[in-house]
Length: 462
Image (cartoon, rainbow, N blue to C red):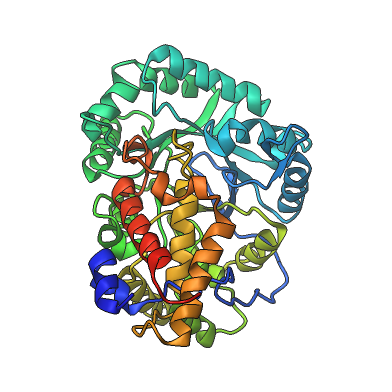
């Protein structure tokens, strides 16, 4: 495929990057060498001692059980939780929909092996499909049962800001939490002590974010307890000023954080690594960071960015493996805020990254399961990895081109069963409303399918 053909499929920016030498290796990183010291803590509005590093429980390690099903590995989770608590982590964030519905139960089992005062639990009202009061109450009560607790420390209205079908984002907000009386119910639960802190997690329409903060302001003007005790936002050094460039329906984190800091509302950060993409940077971007500090992991740059802002109460990381946990602890124990010069340097890296032609998938799996069996995040993760790793050759006869083409196709078939690849997407768009990044998933699937099929039909010998 010539570069002009590549441009027709993926756009001009993509022609400057590699898709092809997809060997499965991630960009080189160097683990932080600093031994963990004392965890950095921030204080909640109710005086909690909150670890700046929070454990995101969406991506627990999995295993295949005796029936051949993919389940969360409870033994590994127990080990990770034990190590995290031993090294000062206090905040654990889960949700009813995480881990194909398994996360709350597994997290509860692991945490309840420790004294209750050793951990803070955050979970969410994930009523994104059924907006009825009965369904919301059932989900709320089930969280207590699954987590084996009599109170939830941090409870969130989950993933507000998105639209659904013909419903606008404001319509969805109204139906999920207001028309059914659920927000009033949760406020009463907070008064009763069953919820200690109430907040929301935000993705999407700024109008919804601004509306919820206006309600907070109105409540404060009446002399009541703050409506929101904390708010969870997507924040990292790329989304700080480039979220709208990457995904037009997202909001720059600099605006979100600024509005919350101005009101004194503590911030919890989700996606500090942009769904892992900031540790799988394009090689040239990774090289810049490694040249700047060869002893620092790519993740440590992103986490130090989060810790630089005093309004941040906690930054969540979904640490699937112990090496992730150990490296992150070396950054947060204690955290070293970035200097102004380092912030400027990261902004340059972010600007470069934001103009890189990848799909903004965070591998959250909210789009799954696909009714037609497509592994949506798997397709996007494979494509992004390949884009990041090499330059595509213009000359089809160049040995580097043939090697690259083979690497892409072989790694694709090794990563994803053929029945789960992009060509099995029928464009039903069921996944679109569930995507926090507002990716036009069917359109992206068609583009990847077209590109892959052109590689398969290419007459150049493999």
